[in-house]
Image (cartoon, rainbow, N blue to C red):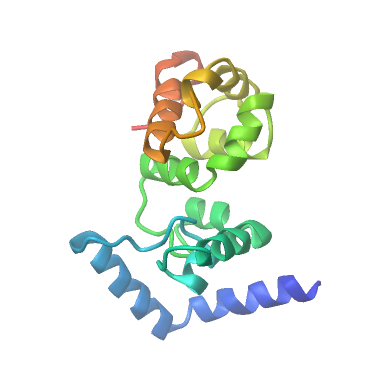
Length: 172
């Protein structure tokens, strides 16, 4: 086992400790009642637990940590790693928002790991069909570089929802 994987496992064990669980409960309460979310721009995952909600370059480190250890996808689907409390539809939304860049690349190709994961999270029937459908809608999803995360997410989810043959069940 590599040193990076050992470190990730150690951080996951720490994340499961009662002190961290209490801290996470407090963050969730703030997310429900306050103005700040329970994670920063990089989304949930190990990176959000390590780097918090601070804005700026630290979110690059958080995103890199999420990507490097694969905790974000696992966290979204399992409700761990600061990704708890999400319904299927919310999980789809969080996944799209947190993986915008990787999804853009995969959607432009019509296939890829993020499309496969989105297919699974969204409860769709066929990853290939999801890829083809999103690729056909690429210009609508990403009309220009300046389009915001919310618009991209809404368009992706609406595209999946409106194409009934995909059978996506966790879109909302």
